[in-house]
Length: 335
Ligand code: TYM
Image (cartoon, rainbow, N blue to C red; front, side, top):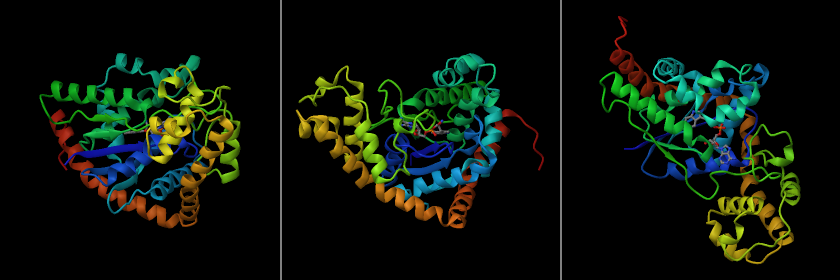
């Protein structure tokens, strides 16, 4: 059976892009013919500074987000990365397979480092090799992600192919496929349709947090930037209108339809009609999730137990693959 792996960083809270572009898609795949492994990638989070006093609760909150959205830990493996040391070990091996030139082409690193490339952590630079380790440690074949992670999954394929070739281990690591599907693979910033929504943007008005209450959600959509034109009657009419397109895509993602269907329903409507409808939809869909997240966060011991059990199951898959990797590379391991 095909095997799915994906991860979410516990750096700050979850935002709507994480939900529509990733977690909601994971839940949809869970019912299909996949073995699924979902990770809270805490080792990735520390590539930028994380307050040690906050990391545990951030890890629990992402876990609560997975659970409240419908990831079933009996059906899928759900764990946090640092509890399975094999991730860090394979990442080191891959640091010695990946080429510096490949890393230099990573657009996310360039965006995040900006002009400050001398001051960022070495981990931020090596991050894609750790991500490749996450995926290949389970011989995962499918990786559901948002659009922004596509290049990292492609690099994972390059690492797998180079390892297999260099060590004469054809077929050992599968070349995983990114799965970037649905209407909301790139949710944009509510104040600037040229930037993606992220947890680290300066203003909270730019994003919908999974923990926002109904009034906040309504206010953020009301204040979302748009152009003055009403909604067109075909998708073509959204060309060159990134903010309008984004709100239509969010509506489609939340209501599980296509942008075409949204345009058909709201053809010719003004923002005074569409924005309140979008806010109501968002509150109806996200409200129950944020309530359940809050409820789960009241029982941290239970979340910790879920993660510990998940980590045991993850390790049972990962350790034999790591051991084979060491063996293929010729390491002496006499115990
Ligand atoms: P992270 O934590 O930044 O985001 C988690 C997931 O959410 C998606 N996403 C979005 N999708 C649509 N619109 C947005 N505005 C938006 N913002 C975030 C991301 O594409 C991602 O799927 N490197 C990864 C984490 C990772 C991982 C992995 C993923 C580590 N190892 C192995 C898959 C497989 C990251 O930083 O995601």
